[in-house]
Length: 224
Length: 315
Image 1 (cartoon, rainbow over the protein chains, first blue to last red):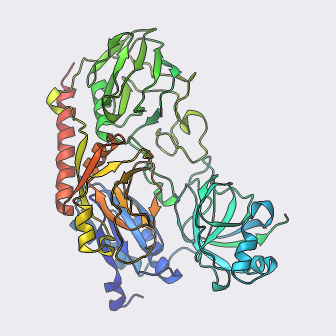
Image 2: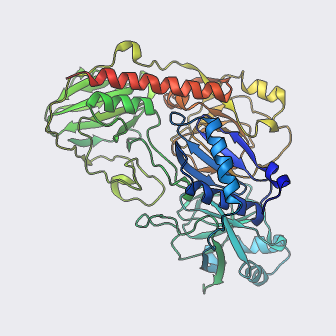
Image 3: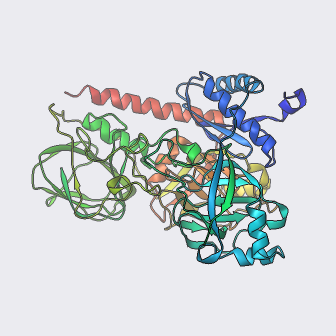
């Protein structure tokens, strides 16, 4: 249950003329993200006039609306009702997904520098990265790109100073407390430590993204 | 319908955009200048969000394979049929074997070529026929138009009325723009002086601008303290300030989320005007409260409703 104090922590504010941000906090934590997920779920169950789509992120849910069908005040009032409902709605259990990863080698060109940065051996880094669960906080950057966290403090690494022009599809990267997978070849600034054969995006499926916000991911060490 | 002889600089199919998939990181896409797309379709008697060709700065060269009614709106790219100018913002009959070509860009940046009945053979991807550039879509669904493509039109069993947009309603695309923008969620990361500078500087549209974002050159916008906000969703027209201080206005093919400070958000109506700003155009931002932005959106839409009603009367 959310206490009265917590409730005041939720901020509603407009972003442009066609969207409202519902912000649940200013930190990246599973607790704050659960509020985002519950809110997305509750909004999905509500009949809100003029609603276009919702986009969950780390600590906020952005609600896109049609300003010809509703107005900001009405929408926010309806969203606040949805927020109240969200407190009692149980979330469906998270999907648990295992992703095979080949760490290092030609597909993980930055693994040695990341290990060195953390005073670890490559083996220790692999062991640490593949021994915990990660929460999918959101998808963004490119279609199907999952932002997952949070990395243990022992294996953090900053973004690259200058991004790589071409990161291959399937590359597993990390930056700050986040880890992610590039579904397509694209430019990118994350440290690349491995590669997965698992497809992250398939237009033949609906939804086409393999992962969704709220999923729990584990990495399994696959051979090189 | 058309045989593509030369593709032009960047010619893609665009419609009203892809809705409901941003949560999976999928950009909405859609016409950069939604006004020009909608008018092109209304002239043709189509659904206003029907897919049409978006031409960028340098138009294609197209051979007409059968008689058709078309409408060209948006930027003036010196369109020709054969050696005669192709008139814009009205329906035009083109005959079999005619060649539509483009010469010098006069004003604006993007033109829209709609055909009465719509284009066929462009499959919908996730509910939209807008080109889906970074998602592994095959053929024309995922790439720009190339030489040798044959762009089929749907067969039409009705006669298309002659329609023309009243000239007073044809937008002009000036070399200096003032665009309305609402202060963004991270405006408080900038000092009052920096905000004032942002809302009074004339920025220049940079050459690297594309369908993802319109990049602006000018004096860098300074952050009060160095900080990286947590990424949130990024609506159309969001103006981000990356570490180099050069603002980027996020457009149709933008990433769905972003983590640079969002200093302001363009009004929806004015994203159409920015879409027509070719590199070199001077852009200033005028600060408006969100209530005014909503009013501007409603009057923009009321204007389009009126255009739709006027054009629907043509028989």
